[in-house]
Image 1 (spheres, one colour):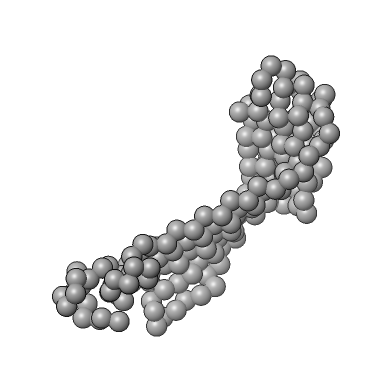
Image 2 (cartoon, one colour):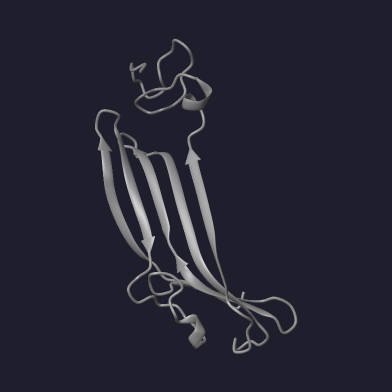
Length: 161
């Protein structure tokens, strides 16, 4: 990789606090800043690919006298569900779309390039605690640890809910 940069701002919200279940949902958005601080080596990379200024750029050498130059808009939205009692993450999801304009170029200056190609990369990842919900194994409603049948939970809770 000859060049790889992105520039993001953060937007944090706490859209849900569930006192009854002792959980909270935090949403973290990684969004393009008003003036992204990325290096765009040539003019054609400066025109916005999407509805905001470009905040993502990559340039790679792909063989002899061949360069792949890409620019665009990258965002992330992360949703994290947290246990309010112990701060542990219960589950998390990430959605990461990237709107891209790509050109194959014949020189390192990126001035002799083929026609632009537009496409999207989208990464989606979800992490959940394995166990009780999916395996039918009883767990503590307080600390979510697995409980042996008929025995007290390791946190000392008598809650069997």
